[in-house]
Length: 233
Image (spheres, rainbow, N blue to C red):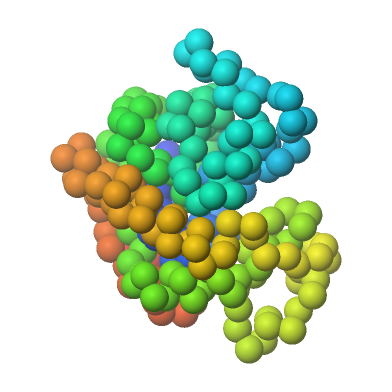
């Protein structure tokens, strides 16, 4: 892809928890100059910074940030209207600026997809939207998520390897490494169930909408998965 193509390209990365969506999105964003929209980090950060009594009103309904914080900790999915509220404005802004986008962790439900895809089609065009699906077994999901950590400052996700297992600080910004509250085995199983029942059906919806959907084996190393994604692009 040349730089002119990149400016009008949207890549959506899907996959179960722990499949490496955020990591691959970060690599692609750095290589091609995309804006990286990582739903759980961006909206999760908004929720964590909000005061307990704060809320946003969407279509006549109040969404209290404290309740959204509790939903995340239980491994459940946020309401699609809540997600789209924060997503729509930013995507319209990026399209106006002519920037390419890489989206990971969104859409997560059919309702959310039915809101997001028409918007992307309108702003970027059908032929410029690519969906990458990272495949990972439930066993691999449980292992990866229960071992991963993220940094306190910018929520960089640090993979668990023999080189990183003894790290106590983020190699990117130096802040403390922590385990996510929603990475307990019980919560991961709930998230897997949510993915299977609510997110996975989106793949058929994308195909019916005429989007290009490419499947990639997410169990390989980060480098190999990245190479496979580049080949499909």
